[in-house]
Image 1 (spheres, rainbow, N blue to C red):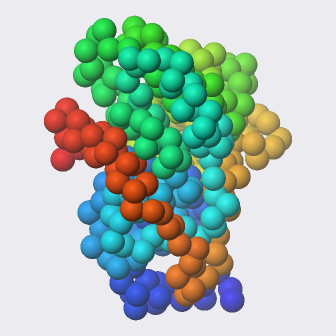
Image 2 (tube, rainbow, N blue to C red):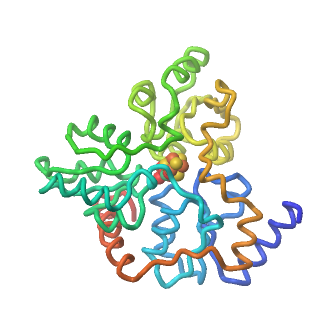
Length: 315
Ligand code: 13P
Ligand code: SF4
């Protein structure tokens, strides 16, 4: 089938099977185009929780689809490619994390949503890059905290809040590999262009960024900014939304400086039109979890959503 035929078939099946397609900003542009909702991890978790469709197809990575299942277990949740993992989730295995936790008695465990259901079940509170700072600030100052699995996001939050959270040593291999030197070179060549960066980037890069935020926060900043040109330090899938929302504005990426596609997340890019079509027609691969795991992992996610509501971060 041609891409056009695949798109038509996907839309037909989506209607016939009462399906909602949720897509992350890092997905291929043709998948974002077909998604009913495109968003960051926080917005997509909320969409999943509120979904009334029989089937949720999650076009993102495994931990995102798992979160959708945890929040809305009576729905069938499909992920076009089960291999779509995340280096942060991979860095944090439940047995090693349980041992790490045992070494730090009296600590509250905050886990970034980019982790497996097993890690969520071992956590007191989940956060996303869209609410991590506010959630941490809302806790008593003397609260001892373990933060997992992203050491870059954790050390950024430590730096801006003055906390001393104990960090798990995981990274997003895509954002961590982006180099401050390359950004500084782009900045020197394009002095009018502010640098927007995701907090999963390493500390040296974040130091030279003009704006740091989640995928949604970066999009909002760009929309409101009077600047016409931006240097973007995050996964390239988001350029589709940046361009769509800001016709006339220009985006400069590390790809313009490096001759590789290393700012693409290979996991995010595993989902293709063909796999989305097959997943809708076969109704698999499906996210399946035990009720016990769903219950245990749901507690800290619901706590995040409740605290986010109280803090006015979500409605
Ligand atoms: P956001 O929640 O900012 O969309 O980030 C998800 C992610 O995986 C970033 O690499
Ligand atoms: Fe995980 Fe990084 Fe890919 Fe996001 S970009 S899904 S954090 S590997």
